[in-house]
Image (cartoon, rainbow, N blue to C red; front, side, top):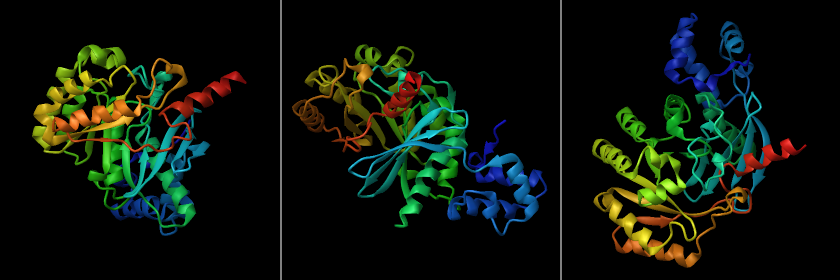
Length: 355
């Protein structure tokens, strides 16, 4: 039976666990600092922690559960990691370099059941949720990679929009966020963390009520129910009106800005008509959100979709701007590797099956 990742414990949970096993609170602070500041890879390296505690931790936990299966590096410095989990499943994690720092995009599930018809992540159905430890360990593996370069670089920004629907793994995602934000550990500020959802409205209410000061992004991709249902099956159960109502609640309670993600698909959702409809839909919220227009990364299995041409992208952008909608065209990263989320994982699984 596989041991649990110690990264899955928040500081409060670690403190309580050690207390239940006869250790004082300061011991948790020691262990925490070794994990997230010194970033050891074995318990035996925790030299100021007594032997009884080390033995206890070794009996119940492990530090490293992910192994690097494939690593792709792009000319722009983007790195896509394909990690193998203890049960043999594969997940993707992406490190991107920006002028403002280094961001990491993490995966929250093995596969995805949301079923967006253009997305590589949903090519393989969800088999399970990731534990909070497995999500945290993605960040730690990237940080260890940076540590080896000895350039003093640290992960400064995190986006939770890899494979899977984060709000479908809600409790583990929350524990992950608490570990990230803990000031005694990685200390990544909430304003530098973005969680993306395809629109689980009931979870948006719940997320709002946690009062975590992190950013929210919505994968919208269509401005009307007919089109959104066509490309995103989640819209059958949670139509746009229901989603917008949950966003009103979020805006009212948090006073934080929302990002609207909109992938542009050639001759599907990139016409002038859709741009006007999107502006109408967002008009009453336009001062409290911005639209991220995303060039599509083609996927072999979804050959019905192609990238919008440059003229269509610019026209869509201009229409939104003229209507007073804050928007930008997302800068692309890693275009010379398997850029689409889930693409590398899908290819590797097919290779293994072909052998």
